Image 1 (tube, rainbow, N blue to C red):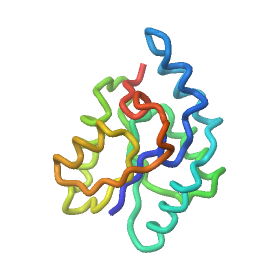
Image 2: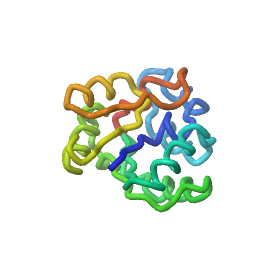
Image 3: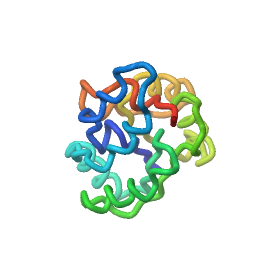
Length: 151
């Protein structure tokens, strides 16, 4: 199984980062603007190549309330129908904690053979747990987006 993050790996979230500049950060507006994301072509290409040979799942720090929006965005941008694992609504834990928990429930590093991720903090935790992690996405994407608590 190969896991892909969404924001910063498949979806270019940079246009909505301005919602995270002020304090408190406006996570609701940040996530609500996800429907306008452009696709990251390198991420889509990597996912489609993996999908031809492996079981691919999506693991994201997006809140569950964005499931329908996320599914519509994926379909609009030519992604296949995939299992999507999102953080529970109201779960404000950091993305490294949420994603490592989701991946463990999927079978851990023995089952999830590769993870495509853009957040260095998430990558560090996943590597410590034994996952093979591939740095993906625009290099200047927002660090906060992948570690977003839902607000």
